[in-house]
Image 1 (cartoon, helix red, strand yellow):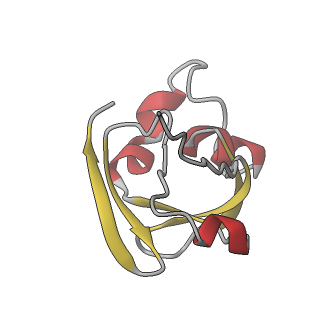
Image 2 (cartoon, rainbow, N blue to C red):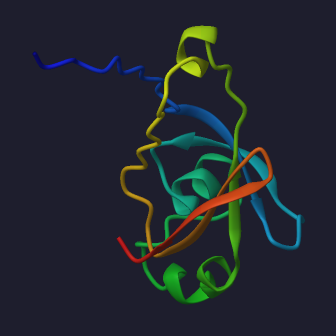
Length: 109
């Protein structure tokens, strides 16, 4: 007899905060989304794909950026033997932390 394991799912799509390494920028950001989209939506940069704007925005891709959010987990989910965190579309290089614990890295999509 095959036993099915119970699976829980929480979507982390929605509003996150986005900070640059220097902490001079701290803005709301939508996930899924990108740093450039968040900076545009918060009127920090102009359209990087218009004219020569891309060259004026090298500071964006030269900076390290941190996305951060909080979420609640149900008691039922905490009772599960395993919980899988799935991240779709993390671009380039990242370090992933959960409750200040390093749980993973990415190196390109």
